[in-house]
Length: 96
Image 1 (spheres, rainbow, N blue to C red):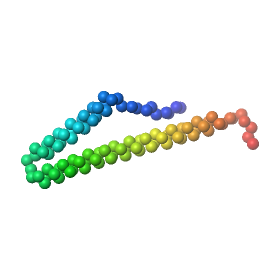
Image 2: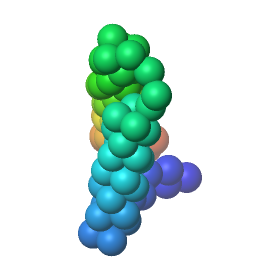
Image 3: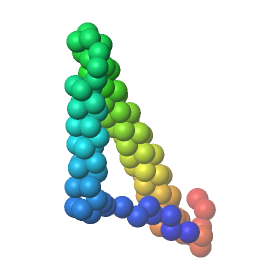
Image 4: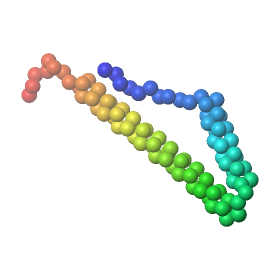
């Protein structure tokens, strides 16, 4: 009945691939906006929109991560409490 969650760690290669993928995507969008055949105001609007979307994505990822970590911590605290109760319980001890 041991439901201890396994800590999953990412490798350095996975981290590097995620960073590289993000950088390539951001550079591709920036180059696309730069070479767009439109007025400067349109390009500026799209640039601000991309920055806003990027910061929103980071915020969402952080919130999801924090919520997942919180449920993991609560689960471990509840499990530790239950283990302490079971360790302290002696069924053969006379009731007072």
